[in-house]
Amino acid sequence: VQLVESGGGFMQAGGSLRLSCAASGFTFVDYGVGWFRQAPGKEREGVAWIAHSDGTTRVSDSVKGRFTVSTDGATKTVYLLMNSLTSEDTAIYYCAAQFTLHSVMTVSNLTWDDYDYWGPGTQVTVSS
Image 1 (cartoon, rainbow, N blue to C red):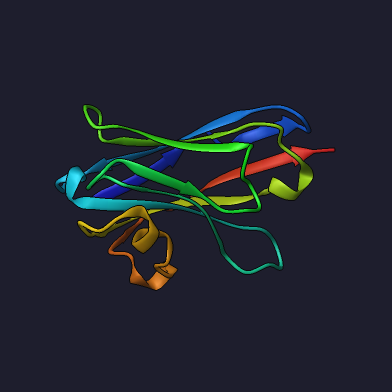
Image 2 (tube, rainbow, N blue to C red; image 1 turned 60 degrees about the vertical axis):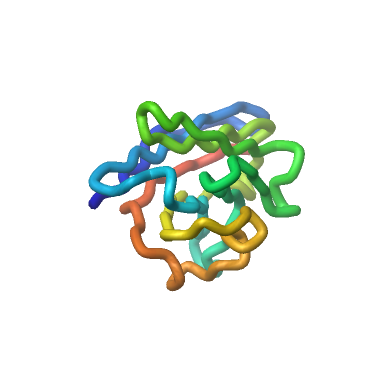
């Protein structure tokens, strides 16, 4: 079982990045996936979630209107499209998966420790 994030890097403020979370070794459609981030000196924060049970998505208020989460079942990849980036978005971004057939509201209420699998993270740095 493996989750691997990619797509991070350096970006100027106002730019966009698309992160990918590639899954392998488990039945993707039975899992909810969350995107988390952790900036230096700050607590880990959940920013986006998707429930494969019904295809619903949700993003946190802090990124609403700028971040979008989507999935490609054929490639077992979840994407996080991040637009209008600011220096406040600088963080390590992680994806996590949890076996659940519940809605995205349930998935978004899970804490980091509730998840079953976690990726190693990808660094996003936004220069102002």
